[in-house]
Length: 306
DNA sequence: TCAGGATTTCCTGATT
DNA sequence: TAATCAGGAAATCCTG
Image 1 (tube, rainbow, N blue to C red):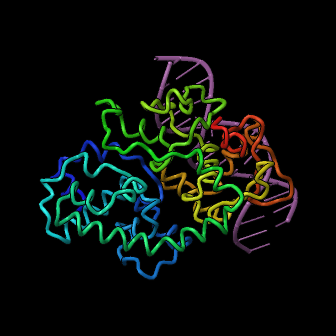
Image 2: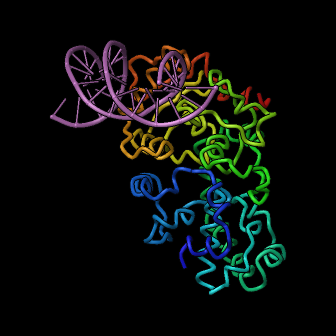
């Protein structure tokens, strides 16, 4: 049974359209990103439809969780029509907080036990790698950042989304689908998308997240930054693209533009010089610096939830 | 319908 | 030589 049929059986269509468009899991960009970033001896050969298998369950988005559930619905021959919208609507961090009894309570004895067992295997498998990678790459800023990144409200609370709120509205306002940054404002968007009072219900900017915000969020959100970019000077806001084309493809995926390249992305980045959202870093390739009109990336801002 | 913002696309030339 | 940078110009998409 494929995901779509599970969705149909479980009446999850509405939920599915509300899932944020978290980029790396989308099939068209997967080959390059998987090749570039991950080495997972246990992953399925069908990586394009099992992206979640390659990352820690703590990093799963709501859509990853749904995909995971649908895979196990298939393997256990579970009757998906008995699944409710609410029971599947949660992200990875929420899922990981559930104990065995809770899983059985939500999914029933057969599927619940199966899911619990598989989840424990996933958690064990990735725990060591997840921690060591964070410590290696983000020793200086991850803890601070994690203090102010709170898990998204489980998407079972779909009453937050109005009936006519579109997918793009949801996705553009929720950053990643896993975390919501507290008040990482946009100086020029001016729509209040990052204002705390608008964190939920979701208010969108007309065109969604801006490029510089997308870049910033990759940098301050280690789970989404699988070696794509790194801070050169965290305090000064200097950062470097490590996998420029992969970032460009992710950006293109977000904008539903499969022809995006680093060359085009970098042109958009250069327009930010004039607006002082970015500053030039002379003589260094793939290196940029946040300017005075950018916000949300400073350690103090993140720590204070500004 | 129109204006304006934010890219996107294409291009040429310079630099590494 | 390829990759990247710089920036002009025009096109595109979207919103108000």
